[in-house]
Length: 252
Length: 252
DNA sequence: CGGAGTTTTGAGGCTATTCAAAGGTCGTGG
DNA sequence: CCACGACCTTTGAATAGCCTCAAAACTCCG
Image 1: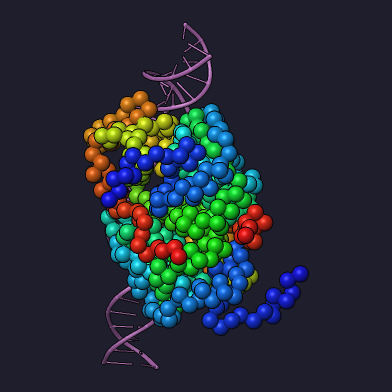
Image 2 (image 1 turned 180 degrees about the horizontal axis):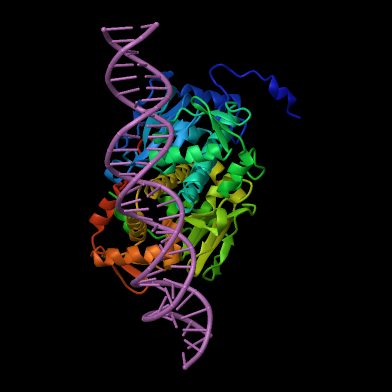
């Protein structure tokens, strides 16, 4: 029933992206989102897009590459709370505070398009469907964070690594960037440690053990999940179906 | 310049609450939120308001009492991801999924008002300021979760307990329910363990050590923070100022 | 007063950490 | 093109933090 969608042309200035996740947007909605985005910016690896403590004047749309969002705690340690992938909106959590809560750092070379917070909120005010989609998108991020917190608090290192791999696999697969269980993994073991709350040394040990157990196979900056079902079962978390065009949302 | 607000009467059906956190709402906005809420429901302690896996057909506004939101992981363990306090909106994260992600359980006897998700989304569609406020409120929850995740992943048990106490204190103080560092704490040590990712036994040891160190004093179902500054410094996290009536949000 | 649930304390074991050093990989400059 | 240096990964050994099991003391409520 959706066959014609396959060949549907996408207007050049208004690409289909994360904003269409909940509702199929109209041309004018898509155009509004496109016009408030600045020119694409290319940035090298390990570039700090936004330092925590700064004033959150604008957001970014991630076009290409990976970006880590992290929070510094006591004694020089930091937790990476999210790996952002292409089409993600960067910096939204800090809209609610006067000084940025998270530090955004590129993991790979990246392309981003900046967007002023005033322009973004203006679009939300004028387009109720976009506002609803962004509200539900923020709730989705809450669910992801809640489950990450559950793994961090209640499970051991191997399970947390499994959870991270499953999360990245699902999101990359949705972007068409992971096939047959193989995904790019441009993270050092230290960066994986920041993500799952382990020391680099222990990440090395656990990855080695998981490879010997036949759960994964490691390549150069890639990793293959050999038993996705078993990795998912290790976490004990459900695989969520996210809402699309819910019938309980109506716009007069 | 806001003097007259002090004596402003509040319409009985439309109390000032969490929804006014970002913007001072108009009477019609407040009325719209009030009319979609069902009759107050009184529920006993340890009552499951919403089991994870169910269909998320409605939300609750918490009027009175404490409610835990938790997620079950492998092997019978569960992580409490948030303690909800009066005026909180319950169940919003699950709006984005087809089966509820979190389990809501009352910690104390509670009063809640149910609200259908369709009615709630209808109000968001009709009132852009409410939609913007809810969007920013969801981002605020993201920041709170990100910081909880950072503590869970990177710090030891004493720091995580300190973070939990500071969070509860700040939120209870904003409600006028904590004075001079003393707050009600109707949680068992097992429930605290679910919240900070420790066993009940270890919670007991750490609380004892913190009391001996002069950081806290324990009463019957209350706790007194004797050195809030030091407890806050232990976490290494900033004390956020959340936005109120930001000048970068305009409604035509 | 009795009983269920909660808190405290002790002992032993497991997970993960730190420190340390060796081996690999990659990019860069000679 | 090779050699070097920086960074990353792996492995070992000793230690710290937390868990489980277990039992005793306490609290609260019926």
